[in-house]
Length: 121
Image 1: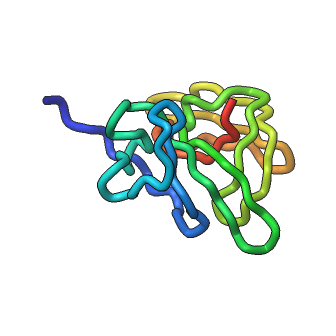
Image 2: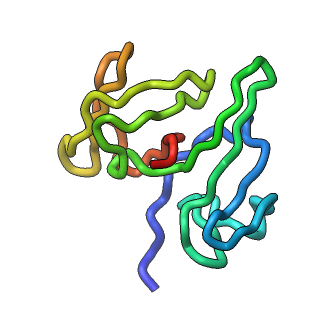
Image 3: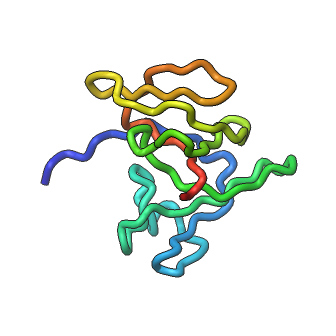
């Protein structure tokens, strides 16, 4: 079996619930029901949905995807304050790197395997 790529951590501080739409399963246990490296359901392999809430009036459902899966015109949620940002640019930026430009933020190369909270399509 080939080695799994290490994913950079993403904060789970605002995570309230994990669920899988295809399996019709709600309240998945992070430790037993989902792959917390790829953020997929262990049962079907589909990305899980994550309900986030900062208890300050900001609650939203996201899916976690790597930088390379993000496309222009997607919306991502910043993990430290649940701010909604439009993706203006998303493209390969060299070996293992990905360039992301978010509205209101300076564009920068990031690790292509870094996970972000994206509004589901």
